[in-house]
Image (cartoon, rainbow, N blue to C red; front, top):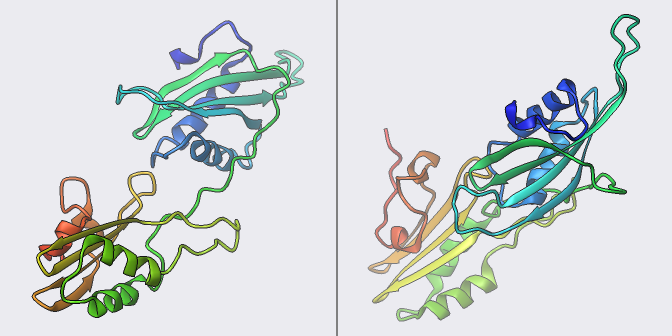
Length: 246
């Protein structure tokens, strides 16, 4: 809690609230300040103290340990009317920093921005391989000509693969999966990857046409963890991750 002590307004209860929210959104890591802000607002829902995110912005850095997603929390503690130990109301603001690994700069008291109003961060888009992708990929690979280029395969995929759906609750379009294509002679490999540590896991769809035989499969979650198989077209060409580990 040492990082919370400063000359700016605040007390032990606002310090505790700021630290609690920062810890709550530390994991899984997010990919932007807006995503961290959305999770902070959700984590504070129902809190007995008024909480808001009043600033958010992203930055870049070559230092992997540096904060790249910056937030300012505002916490209001209404005080108490205790006759012996009354507490005055307090409005406190805190700067907090995160990156792709999570919390890197613990909450630190700061002066509240002038005329700051609570932000309503956009919903975090769902990031997954869309439903219906498996049979669509099977169909594309089966119908490809015997000799193709990377561009031919990508064009066929763009015509046939399903688009990310609209979330019915948030009306937010899902984030497209990452597409990877590789051609080795007459063999073709395709990979679709969605999710990462920020979403709690990897959603991986692989497909290949090797020696004229077409196969589409999904490696298990355990097989595509960091240090295991990579969700790439080369992995699909080599037909790795077909059999789940025991």
